[in-house]
Image (cartoon, rainbow, N blue to C red):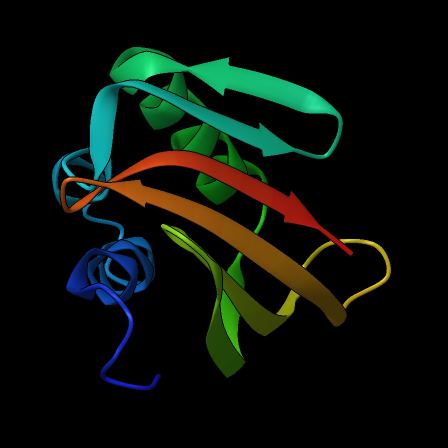
Length: 110
């Protein structure tokens, strides 16, 4: 990942790969929103539950393909996600909004 992106984005992917949900949740603001697979998850407790439920349902890895700034406080990370889920592997776009060094919004979509 290019170094010009906020370090919190790398921290998010590192924490997810390590199944370190405390560190993953620490990447987000207290009022953060995650939108994934048609569902919206708000604030730390829901974000933790979302990520833990994914890990419980599937074994998967996320490979970063490319990343770039897409606007003020906005960053897009293209990934390939492979694992034990239907349609694997799939290319997904992670759209991060970063405010004061933390993720305030994350949208994950094909």
